[in-house]
Image (cartoon, rainbow, N blue to C red):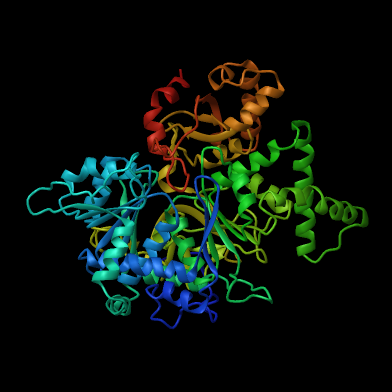
Length: 639
């Protein structure tokens, strides 16, 4: 694509800032030697940390993680896999997920991520599309899904079970390895992960594995991530070792404690998302920068805030929905009558911090108030993050400016970033030292960002993916002349900061010809702690309407304080609630131009969910699913 001479372009620096003596930059710029490298340098340092179903804490050192990864890699090769073959993983994020990823990187194999919520039809699509030979399943429930689809997957050779089957209830012979009949020419077997590793240690030597690792090149694929997207069928983003290394090299080198030894890491990374774009990057980042990767247990009784507090992370990557949930939980922890004062204090705190950053001196009384509030209210807010936080990164969807301002005002080291699966999860970022509120920052080193004449954000750099699996380079159409066409709309200011303004495919064409983005009204509505999701609608209509869902935990507390029924079905019929939501919509509309306002709303009895396909993996609304599923509900708002 030939950009116009006046096209705004922001260029990232060219110097690598993340290589230090730790990162294996000299090893061919792949991740094939990463696990072994860390085991050799810091064998006793904790690489992984997690809690089991009972809450008991466990950890795995870098040496133990390499031993597990190496035997897994040898086991996969023992199954007859060749370099470039695909290994699917159908599981939630857990230690076995990470060691399987490291094993595939070492053996020159390609990992394909499948969420545990994936249904059999999607399993058929993904495994068939990528031609996976092996699928690693979390438990018997996930294995049953594969079994239900096995007849339609003739190329699938093996299923590997992470969690071994339960022991027999009474004494008896141990269950034999499961053998199942298969079509002619298709011998499919199921074995446990322990059996796979044992077989690898016997059948494939460490020297053979080392030769595979040495043969990996930067352009070789590491993962295929199927993006659910907000529209259209799932497609597999094919990402290479080099794509990830370019992002890792651009990542700031972590600070080290003066007394750090080989028994310590540079801190903890707590990943709260499923094993998709953000989690994929964080797993390799933890090894690259010598962090401890901490997994979320995510049990039914675990709240996100409680788990974060217990994990005490230094690095906390979040999607906007998770940040909004934390914001609502923090506000709900104080009496409602104090909410307005807390929000006002956060606004004043942000003003004070911005003045100090500009080198200004605060007036004495303002300084006195700020010092006192910093030790009391603001410290209490930061304590919800565990008290050891160095950085919260937020990316994956538009973020409420009010929520960002609240946390920044309270002194939470939060930075907004931007990236896509197609850019290995990263492209631009703010930093605590160079932050511009309302933007997603400036390009990472080695990345260029441009704005096309129609406002679309374009990205160029070594982080840009190789294309969608199965699509010819000239046909998949997203990358042209080296520029990734993101589908996002945005602007770049004079200092190179990128501001996102919407999605091209999400523009709503009103009946009088005006095209509007739904994000402004949705973002304004989600600022209220009662509201978890807001989805605007109005294609071909004279004005927008909006579908709301409630934050159930906050709504029950709100209802109890007003002596209203806590049951959602009854609460939604209460005039007091509907009146409050009407006022919320009126306040949101007051901040927007005429065509961006919603003229009516309705409320669902439940929240939108990932399992129902209404949210994407990055917790964005799957707009086409919601609008199709609830079309009659939307249409009734125009009657």
